[in-house]
Image 1 (tube, rainbow, N blue to C red):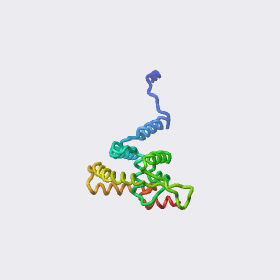
Image 2: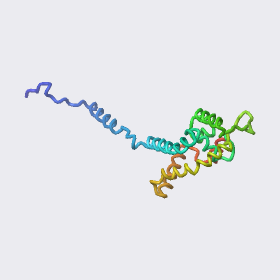
Image 3: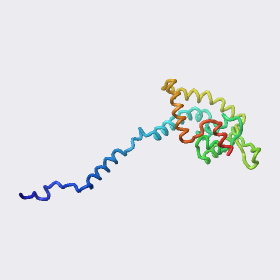
Image 4: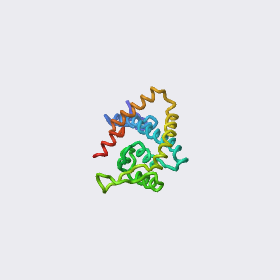
Length: 187
């Protein structure tokens, strides 16, 4: 029987070679990342959007940027002065960004430095009367805005969301309340 010319022959796969490339192609296709289903991307996008929505409340009216608000918010819920490092740790904001925000807020007389009684080389931060007044004025506005953002969820869904976020925060060993933050600052 005569063989067909080589151009008409169907090549026979070599053992294992074509199988491997087919498996690699399938793996590559299945390894594609759909960002809209990727939880870190979704959380980051939500955080940016919510942060921007809240920033609208304090930027236009009070001229605060997001890092300045983070400093005010952290100092506002505390009873005692704290370090800039504490603020950076709680807010997960780079310390240089917090430092610039503190400087800007000090120029506006909303934050002041006080000497640390335990270590006179270190200064701690606290709100001035002007800063505390601004904080108290902003809280109801921000809480109202938070409620608007979460209004798409039922009361049970809000509880579930808080529970789920807490579990993720715990798994990442994030500080979840002022007692935990205070304990970490003591070290």
